[in-house]
Amino acid sequence: MVWGEIDRPRDSDIHTIADFFEILCITSLDKEVSLDDMEDHLSDYSCNYLRLENDRLDVREQIEWRIEAFSDRYPFEKDNNTITLSTSLDLKQKAYLFLLLSANLPFIEKTYRNEFTEIFEDLSLLSLIQFTGDKAESKRFGKNNQDFSGTKAERLNDLFNKIGNKGLCDDSFFRNRDSGDGGIDLVSWYRADKYETSNIMSILAQCACSRSEWSKKQNDASYDRIGHLGQNTNRWNSMLFTPICFRDNAGRWSVKGDIQNNIIFDRLRVINFLRNDDLENFSFPNNFDSMLTYSRTITE
View 1: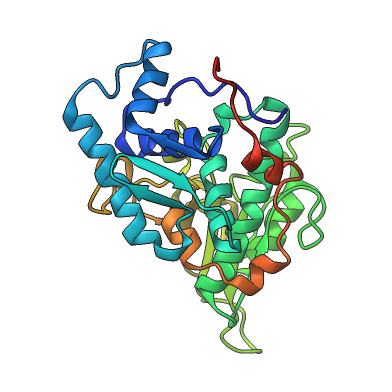
View 2: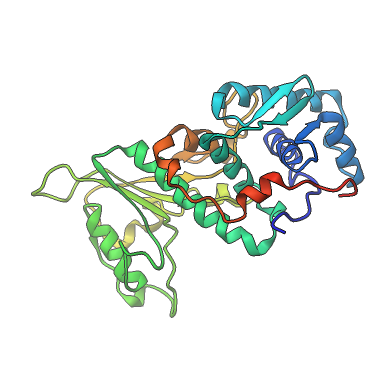
């Protein structure tokens, strides 16, 4: 069983409650759920997020915005206060559902969560490749990576050299047995000519699924945090990918104070740069399809 307990939203943000509404729909017996159904479910867990009519209106408006913004990539249909999961899901609709689940890992059993976070990085890389275009080199960066190998110092030096700078790290820069990725999950850089590799545009990106942690990770790969590890000819762009749909009901950032000075790709932007050709060969988690056909019992 991959699904964990589907109890209540982890915060009161409308986009979080709308996600929960969609998850209840996926796991319902007839793949349909109403706001009344969700209110009954939440009351069973002593959760009063829908206690006022304005709360229900906000959820309806969030779903309506998603229908408009995601268009044919949105896998649910709405009828008044009810949403229904599409009976024939295409690849981009499946990608939406994968992002939805990746943004709500507390409802997935712990042993399966790492698979979702790993595959979210793969999907984010596909989006990054389309965003940066065919003039850029875009790669994953981390442990057990054929493009960047060796110790943490060696991998970071290799990365700095590839993005037009000069790595200065040695093993003394880091704690013993620190083999981490330095807060970098994805990288992208442009080669402007075949003679000079410095002074080029580049991106270092972090991927974050956790609803409580993603905002804190926005500048893990920033120049200000790790720029001292190299001799640099120019600043890179820091970027964060998250499967969370961090939007209000007009499509703006839900809480502007949580957004820092970098490039943000949330659920909408990730899916905006995915192509059907990329998704045809994309591997979703092993149990993903069975999660979409699962139904909660009446007592859950």
